[in-house]
Image (cartoon, rainbow, N blue to C red; front, side, top):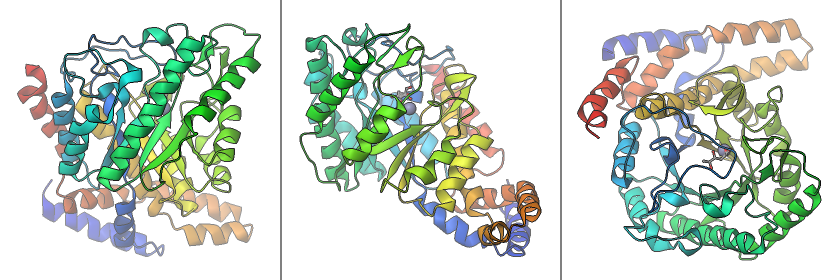
Length: 421
Ligand code: RNT
Ligand code: ZN
């Protein structure tokens, strides 16, 4: 897009928003605090790089599609993430899963992982001037094949996963320390049951016991923050999920952890955005997994839909950008994966920028005076305000492609890099 055109459109947009007492420059400035944590696992369809290759399984998640160009090793993951970051305005972090360690050609089981396996990632992050977040990988492993990990009745398996998660906390704390920005270690386990189960109590008691053991060690909050991610159901755990919202919400609260709200993990008519102002009354900080479920927790690429918009609006309206950590969580193997990253991250960023451009004082005053027609009218009017011009300008000043220009960049990357893999 021509810079002059972007600027002309922005100047008009700035005036239009100013008529509603919205300062577009201030909104853009606030985007500095919106740092999206990009998940590494879109690059290779949640495959990881263990030797021998782990097979995605153990319950709960599934990837479909076989679009060419998938990252086949860690350098390719880095190359793709770097390219994605170069096409995104603002700053991002990287969210790593434990099975993306650099294990070389040897087999390093999950209960054996060490900081040194992630030293390369820490160096990479230093060079990229970005923070890292982390996740234990409690799936795609023979010890998760029966669908249970931290809540398993098999003591050997349970201890194996406890050890894995403990080590992940050590690694995450090292990442936070080295990079001078707290690393969020988010625990999600697939544990659950396909069919009616009759001993949920024991599984949940075991999960509590395992977590108590894992969290015995304290790390400075400036290095490590722990979060736990709940789920309603998954493929293979349709009838019961051990780590449900009712389980983790009180657990996180009692133990000073963050709760991770994944918007694919609730009943489809439940609104994740609505949970934010509730949780913020009790938690200092929250973690989000932003995704798009299509009929089920399908982890489609995030787009700018009502759900994402409501989540961002609720964070901004609660003045909580610095208290809510936004991570992405989708994996689509049926389209250009770099394109998936850029679409999804931009959509999340756009949701925040739109929210920052809301005439919130005016809306609140309508609401406080019971002027509900006026409130609804203004909300509708905001939908057709020239947001795109502000977004393009934000891209332009961030030296990244505005308008449709990123499509061509990704097509070029596909023909020069991805198609040769
Ligand atoms: C699964 C959870 C979890 C995973 C990642 C790969 O339902 O959303 O966050 O997607 O750990
Ligand atoms: Zn998730």
